[in-house]
Length: 100
Image (cartoon, rainbow, N blue to C red; front, side):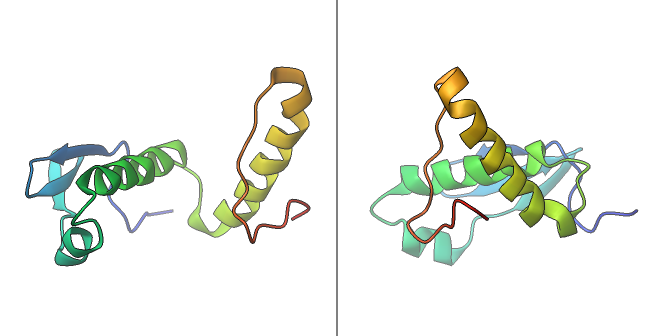
C-alpha cells in the first residue's frame, strides 16, 4: 500500500518565523498564517502542538490511516487497564466516552 503522506520519521525544523517537517531529505513547510494568528501570544504552544503532531505521526508509522480511530480506542482501554498496575494515567477530553 502506497502512502499519500510524507514518509516517517518526521522531524521538526523551525526558526522564529518558519517551521518545516523534515522527511527523508524533503522539507515540507508547515508554517502558515493561521498558526501565527492562532498562537500570536503563545508561540511556544504552536511549537508544542507541532511536536505532538509529529510524535503521533511517527508513532503511527506503518499503521493504515483507516484503523487509527479503532487503534486509539484500544490503546486508551489498554492504558486504563494498566493504570492500577503501573500508575499510568491518561487524560480524557471532556466529551470522550471512556467505554468507546
